Length: 388
Image (cartoon, rainbow, N blue to C red; front, side):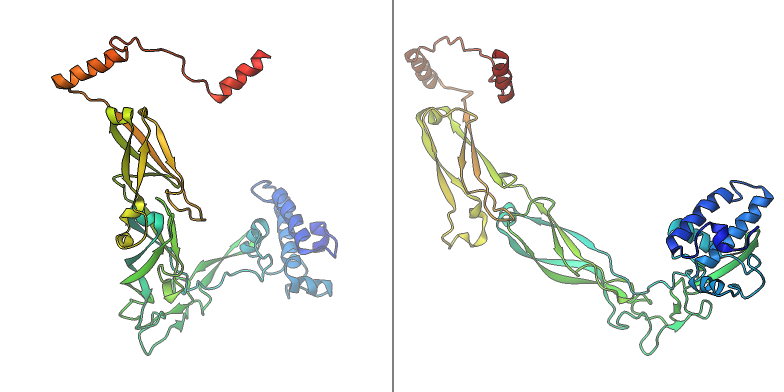
């Protein structure tokens, strides 16, 4: 059987790294002991694995191409153990090769988490914008150690167990040779450094919790659930790392007069039946009336709603441009709904007058009118097509 790694993998001598990796994956799936336990196949799998170990490592490949021994020992196929990490790299997209192993020490300094706080505001504040003062409780930089985690006058030292690598290797022998696995160092928890004398203020974390005051500007037009982002105002990261962001989630409190639908405001006025029949005018306060500075300003605080004679219950009027300003400009409308209030109790004089009115209008015993509900647009289009 050939001992040439190129022939074992079935690739040319000018094959690139991706071609070599694909060839090894294909052969490993066919020859792996879990798939084919035959002793001869297991031996072939070890040869193919060693061939990949040579060709996936640029230095070993160059040494073999020059005619040397890439393992520094005997003939090809009898070299040092093949790392289990190399197999994982080949299958799952790692760097490949015996030189591409450890991930290195964990970073002690990391970005902080984002924070979320809820803010209750009034409808007028959501519509026209407001600046609020917030008190937030988050992690901030420790001013004693300035994020290092070490007591003043001291500093972190290199871990002697892993020598700063943050991980240690464990080697086991198997039919594949030596299988080497890397695990985080238990002594330094993967950081590569130890803090022999932690800061007493932050217990070595580099940050402490503190309450601080922020000014947040809420733009005009926000609605329930809108989140306002304050960059770098969240939690300071471990080791004094950069802070995350603070998100202010808006909750708009119910209004006694208006309800909001998108950028439109809706309000309902209730009229007695006489006013609806004869017509009248109603003063309706606007949302601007809720602004604290509207008392001494030129802001329009109310408008007159003209109710035409014969107005029916359920009718509505649309007043353009008196809704909520949009986040991207423009402004919604104010929609006024009219409800006609029919009296439920009448005294003798009122009942007599109504009966007299009914007699004058010929409505002493009205039969009412029944008619089909109005067809939708789609129904009318369907009827038009059927007619042709």
